[in-house]
Each structure stands twice: as structure tokens, then as C-alpha cells.
Length: 241
Image 1: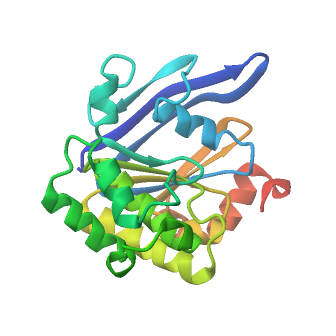
Image 2: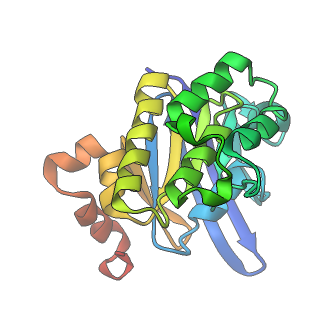
Image 3: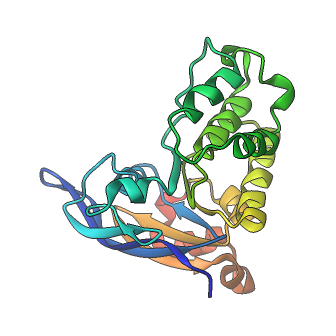
């Protein structure tokens, strides 16, 4: 069986009297794409921020490639590449200048690995253009390239298709599937767009009101129903977007 890269166990987060995430547990294996599904406000972004160390949990544990983030934070985060909400890019710098700047912050960014990331991005012919002239899809791919510079075991993406047109979504989907299935990268991707997650993911986790409702493989779902039908069954028809 493939290695467990992300292990989330009994994770909870409260903001004053509001429980944003309520005792969720799941695992993500190497080379696997897990869709983190739920309506807006379900707790997806809060969970991702806890996994990436941006928000501290009230209880539970998070282990990344064997490192507990509360005990070995730097070692755990050295295995993570992430885009939470939108890529943070320097608009007045070129694509290449952005890559060069961020690569200097990464321990594992060898010249050969940087070239591989650039090749994967499909942006090689546009790297000398300023980022402010990039389309939203190109910015997303540049952000992904930068997230991969540290040669992570785990890639975390929060609503990565927001604002993309159908062609941009398809390009991103193929890019992510190649990373997972050919490069053995583990990917956690949050979304509320069921049709896209159905095409992208190996398995899905559904969360509503901070609670995990189910986790199933797409192979299992497709044998008897559709992702939309499963979502309606476990989350309620009013939550379908």
C-alpha cells in the first residue's frame, strides 16, 4: 500500500462560540488526489489553514510525511507546497523573476528541479513577460510552479479553479493529474464544484457545518451513482451549488 503523506486525526477548531471544524479525521496517500468538498463556509479553508500552520487547532493532530506539525513544524512544512485562496505573486516582476525570487527561499530548489518545474508549468515561452500581463489561468500555473519549487510531497490547493474559464480548468486538471499519477505527488484540493472534482479526484471527502460526512473513492461512487447524488444524500439538497 502507498505511503501515508497526510494524517489528520480528530482535528477541531473553535472561534469563540462557533465550531468551524468539528473532530475530523482522514488520510492522504502518495500519488493520490483527495477532493475536499463542501458548500461555502463548511470549514474547508479553516482545515487547510490548520494543515499549513496558518491557524492553530484547538485539538487533534496533523502529521505530514511522518512529522507532527506541533512538534516538528519546519520539517513538516518542508514537505508542503500550498496555494491558499490566491497565489501570492509580484505583478511588476516577470514570471521568471518570481520563480527566481521564491526559489532562493527554498532549500530543495536545485537548478535542475527549477527547470523541471518550469517545463511542467507550460509557461516557458511567457516567463519573460510581467505577471500583470498574465491571464488568471497563467497566474494560477505560475503559483503552482512556485509551490512545487521546494519539491514537496504534499500539494494543497484551496479553490484553485475560481475565476478560470473552461479551457483553464481543463489545463489545470490535466496538470494536477500528471503531478499525482506520474510524479507521485499527494494533492489535497478543496472546492464546491462537484462536476470538476468528479473528473479530477481519486477520492472525495465531504464536509458540512464543520463535520465530515463521508469519504469515498470515485471508483466506489461511480459504480452505483454520481458525486452529486452522494453529496445530496449526505449533505442535504439545500447545500448543492
